[in-house]
Image 1 (spheres, rainbow, N blue to C red):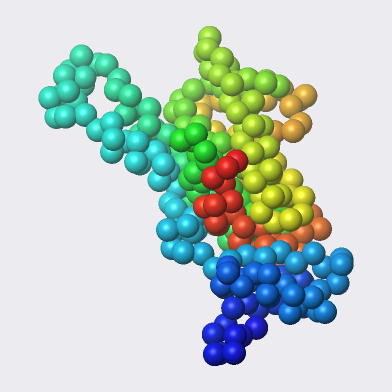
Image 2 (tube, helix red, strand yellow):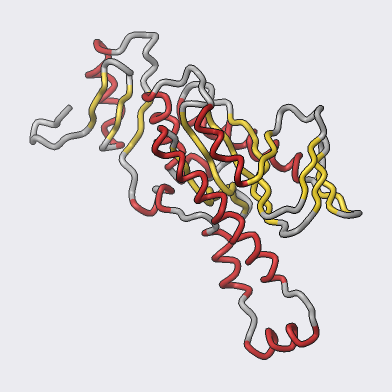
Length: 254
């Protein structure tokens, strides 16, 4: 669809009902003009063209952690004293987390050849982020990654036990998936269920209680199996959800 001066403002795929809006100010005019071509059942999803700073597709695995590391980077003498005394610095745990997100991110990227889309370091309100979002033929998934080198990990219905310490990783994974589902449903205009995934990297042993059904628990080597997952999601639905997920504004109020 073009303006009288030839400037393109939108285009519509009549088969899928996918409507891409290129000029936000013309939204109402575009919908009025295209109304005869839109059936009540088509429920077109309107996506505006993204500015580069709002497009999350360029985020790399662990970008959020990388920024924290740069903020926490200790001076040389502080680093040297910590190493001599055997103390761990706060930056050490962030560095391990960064390595884990990069490993999981690399495994997720390999699914692209099977029609999957992946985004990394999705910023949410409250200075937190989702490590990875995977969207494809098998649905939508929200990944919470933990790098625990050499650890023996037990995963229960609500928490994770490492040694004699418990951590709320399972509850956090559920909460992140709910936030992602709310954000994407609002942006897409149709229900988008997002399933939580808790991904462990470099652990020595992983045990999961059989009663845990709503959160997938995997190691990085298990991610390749996602290529076999199938739902009724067609390519146009995958692209609609992915396009919405790429937009930073989709997540800012989630």
